[in-house]
Every structure is written in structure tokens, then in C-alpha cells.
Length: 247
Image 1 (cartoon, rainbow, N blue to C red):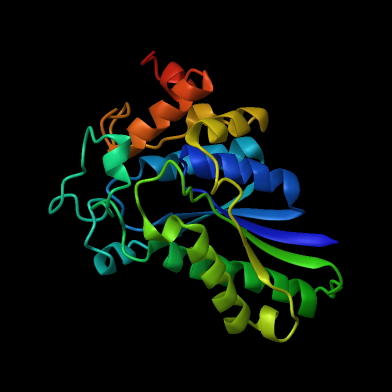
Image 2: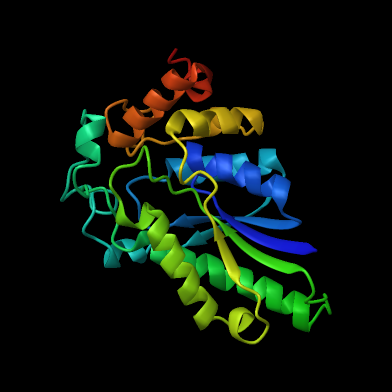
């Protein structure tokens, strides 16, 4: 059995943990990072360093035009929409927040799957790799428990999108090789994700989760609050704050 994989690596806690997991469970893995017009490039910079530490092939793709399309978000239009701060975890899941980027995961999945399908088709049709036992896997890091109410982070979304990829790809229709969308932390709490990252020896000290840029995390946005809650409940000091001298 030979597996080809793509892991979406944003540079945050969750995607770093999933990429470390994918690295240990895939024969040929590429980490993809998208610069899509988000508020800052801090996470993007971290992603390259994380991939290098893990020893994973890394591709940074500039898709900044997406910010012009998916403009109705605090992450792509911070001048129009402020990032919510100091919200309770209960209020985070009560409605879809302004930090939601319209159809971001759908767009990311299409790009990642196209990249992966190109790799696998080349292996099949040019390199002569046997179809028998060949796997195509896209790894993503959505979370349906400690999350901010994003509709494209739910298990049912990924079930539907996997069907679309099977029907719309050459791999699925001609070779009957499904593009598997794997979301290993989707049912984990943030504390469980932290523990998994530590267990996998993922370089969590280089991760960045804050919606703001700057030298240190703001500690007020939804992402910072959920991250802090996860490390606290896991009983583990946040290694990125230790590295930055914040704690």
C-alpha cells in the first residue's frame, strides 16, 4: 500500500498537530499553506518553520485574491469588521461569528484535492505506480467541539464534500480511488488536541493561533481564548508563550 497525502498547514496549534499526525501515517506528504488575504502573515511564517522542523515538503501558495472574493469577514477585511474579543465559550458557539470566511474550507479543499490528484495521477500514469492499494488523503484540522461556530467545521460538511470529490475527480470516476478527507481531531476537545500534539512531538512552540499579528498573541480573540483553555485543561504550559517569554 502506498499513500499520498496533503496536509493543510496554517501554522496554528490544530493544523500543526494534524500535520505531525499525517507525517507519521503517510508515505508521501506535502504540507500546503495558503496566503489568502488574511489579516496578517504571522501564521504563514510559522508554517514554513514548522514544516522544516517536521521534515515535511512544504508549498506556500499565494491565493490572496480570495480575500477580495470572501471579503465579508474580520479575517479578510479587518478595516470593516473588528475581531470579537473576550467572548465566553458559550457565546462563541451561539451563532456564526464575523471571523467566519465565506466558503474557505470548500475553496481550500478544492485546491488541496487538485494538488493531490495531480500527484497521484502522475504516479499512476507516468511513473507506473500500481493502482492496487494506492491511497489519496487530504488532512485537515477542523474541530467541532471547541470551535467558533463555523459551518464548514462540522462532520456532516466533510461527509458531503467527500462525495463531491469522488464524483468530480478522475481518480474517483476512472480509477475508483477516493480522495479521502481526514479530520483526525474533529471530535477532540482543545485539551485533547494539546495532549496529542505533545505525544506526537509536534513543534507547538512555533505555532501561532491569534487572529491578530504582532510580537505576542493578543490573548483576547476567540482563538487565543480557546487555545488558553485547551492548554490549561491539559495541564500543559503553552510552549509558544514560554518561547516568547510571556510566561
